[in-house]
Image (cartoon, rainbow over all chains, first blue to last red; front, side, top):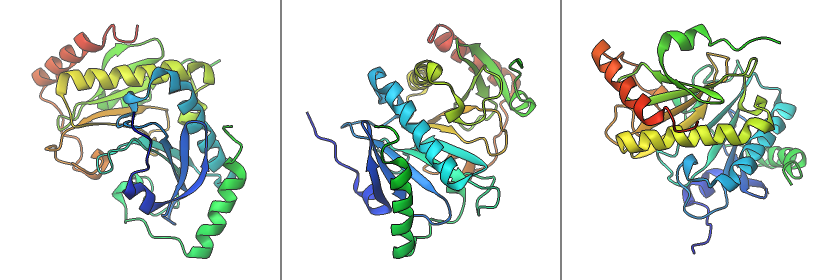
Length: 139
Length: 139
């Protein structure tokens, strides 16, 4: 059986926030939007429907916890949740806080300018803030 | 308690395929992509994290059934699943079959040309085809 390894493109574009029972919780390095990515730590998952039924409850719970964490921290207008994976085949679920004032609104973030990276200090502060709220959320 | 009513924008852009225990299963009138929309038949749901935990298993099961139905019928390269709702606030989940030859690939469909409506006969045939595969899937 293969072990779970994070896809190199996801590793390059994100910073780890925490690890939950099912998912690795990553922050997308895109300062325009508070943007989490959940990656279920199971080998060989590609589409959402590849997630075994025994993990369905856990996955929905983790998506909910991530969404509520973003809601609490950023009071967004809307949370966007998506499993696309046309470019990176490893199953990963975007959980993105959207404000009516953000640069892509109301379009999806992928229709907008490419992600702008955080400044290092800003990135560290953002990760700390998220880690504080999310670390124990789905334990 | 309010009753569930389909948002008028969703009603205008889709055709009903079937009704599952939780979700209304709709076909998006967009001939570029085989594109289903699941709408949980509960009043006042907006974000995915508003779905009560008691419906989590059912929702994941219905997303899985919709995805597998599209997979069987269209053998796509990838299934995209998304709950965005920046424009239509009622919770609805896109389940879209993507081919590497479709007009938006690899971008999400929302970054592409607007949906082109099916011809009436084509639409009727597509709904029949989907209804045949999906009607009993999540019963």
